[in-house]
Image (cartoon, rainbow, N blue to C red; front, side, top):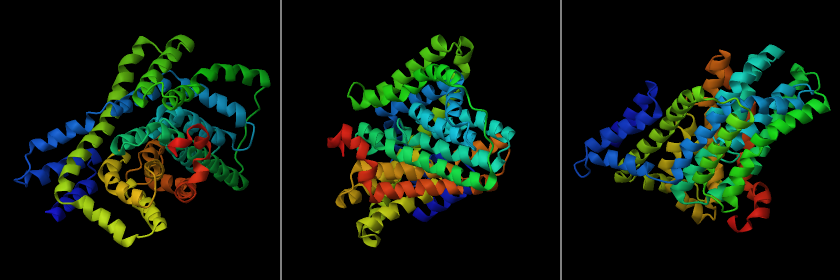
Length: 428
């Protein structure tokens, strides 16, 4: 029966069925053939998988990101970053990376970053003379930082799966996220030597200072979110709600760019995006019940124990495993299905839940720009009108940066956790 289910999974995947539906259909088919498990189990597992206060942070962070986009706050962040680096050759590309890092501290979602920032910067870069490949590559790759620099929706899900401290995960993601952003800027710098990217007229100090004052309130959003969680003032879910309220205040009263007419499309976009992520989480829980019946988890665990007996082999295997999963599966089901299997093995090697979580989140972030699933790649390519094949070739140099950083987190965690240890050494 297990071979039939694998065949059904691959068939649905080849047909282009969304991964959330694939997981649910495979679970439904498998459980329907078992006399010992009632069909109602599918619905029960889907419900219990979502019955978590922590997971309420997912739609709230998505709502905060949509409010920022709808209120055109992201446009102000773009102008602010462009004011810092626009005078240098390749300035708009550098600004693209910088604003993704800032926006990451607000949204926790890579797709929201790609859609919101890409719709502005990809046409702007192409108009300035950047190639389609550069515009799409920089935008898609930099948006993956959205799930690494806190807050992060995958980190929230991971925390709910293994019970790891969400504050520790948020703090742990800061340094790797910054390193990836800086690494992507180095790739742009190297590309500039060959392609001679354009630069812009420098902004006067008075203009920049005025813009910086306007952009200070949205830039403080991640400080409020992360500070509240780390300081024990609020949970991740409560901080997400605060982010929504704060973003609304900025849009309505400070920038006056958000009105009553925006409520309906804002809620619709939030519900649609949230439903996609949460449905995948729910169906992954249902499939997990089926996999436990066939002891698939134990089989996977035995493979890791038997064929990767050393810590360094295990770490490389986890990175390779999730790089593969990320090509066709969203981060949420990939964690729901296999993190509970890998965590006991990781603990036996002395790998903390926080370190394993960061490795998995960063690795799965690469999946956002690797076909056939790569949603960020598809969104950026669609904005530019470029094929998936050309888009993927453009993003490869930036993928290598993420791979280097995740290897660094795996084998030199003290570097990645140096700053977080200053604030909360007991978490690391």
